[in-house]
Length: 163
Image (tube, rainbow, N blue to C red; front, top):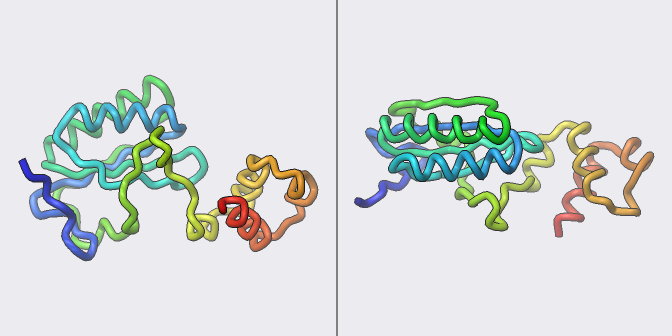
């Protein structure tokens, strides 16, 4: 069976549903995606990291399949971590998918784990940026330097350390 691809402009193919499952933590993310893809004939469109450790998984397919996949993913994720939200939208409005950008899904645990991009850093709070900077373990950017850094300085440091 051929899998329809999203229409240009961020539309979900006609007659298909959009399923979203937001998990907290990488283990819950892997478990959720594995369960969703095994439970029903759905396609993983993308995964988006919303805040540190929160990952939203977006799937599409027939409404019943998407509902079954999201239910299975939520149950699996809840066994090993936390589920922050679940949503199935039958026949979503045109352009709704464009809210998620155009990057493809990356499989968790395959080296393609969702990470912050340059745009994501700009959307983060200073508190979150400071935590990300502390997690880098860079001796030149620690302690009070991080505490006193401005948002622009934190973003510049994180972008540089990503290279």
